[in-house]
Amino acid sequence: MKRSLGWAAVLLLVSLGLVGCLNVKTPDLYVSGTVVDKDTGLGVGGVQIDVNPGGTTVTSADGGWSLLRAKKGSKVTASKDGWIIQPESQNVKGEGDVLTFVAERVPFSVSGRVANDRGFGLADVLVIFANTGGEVVGTVRTQVDGSFSKSGFKGTYIVTAFKEGWLFTPTEYVVSGEGQEIFFYGSPVPEPGE
Image (tube, rainbow, N blue to C red; front, side, top):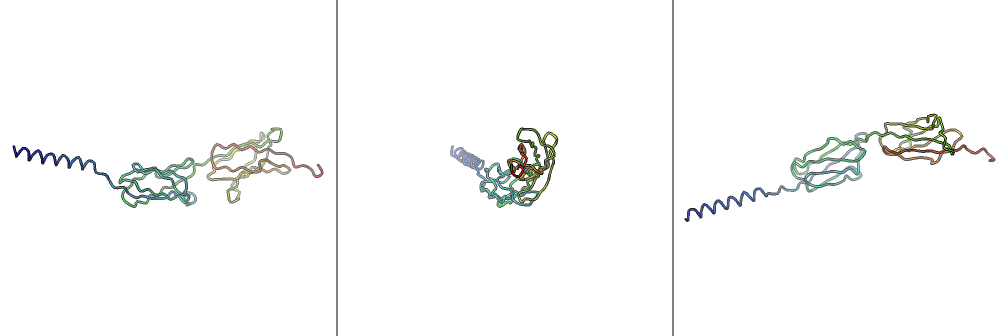
């Protein structure tokens, strides 16, 4: 009887030990990183970083991020609308990992129309695209119906319209992504004395 109680006690202790082993928590790891713009080399702010398991954070304006709750083997992904980010994912290998993602803006097109104050399209209006530093990066002329389109943009641009003898409203548009229609309305410059 004593012998079977002894074995029962040993079996109970081993069982409790195994249950405890199965419930062992892995330690939280500190991981950090950067998301950089492929074209400029600058950090990209506002990128969502998902660490699974671990949590979610967002990059600061300089592209940096950090998280304390990652686990060894956690899958890290980065995403932001209008951007392609590589690699698609990375795994946490250990404490203090620094993970870098490279982001590239998805190219977009800008289209629109230039019309007179009666709604008729104006042909041969020069539509000018400048970067935020004021440097002209592209131009296009309107078609007979006043329409225009230009593609291949990445970033933020200021769009203006020009034709000798005409004033346009609004004076400019700021565009930074797909889906923005631009409409300029032109009127002849008044003659002196009018």
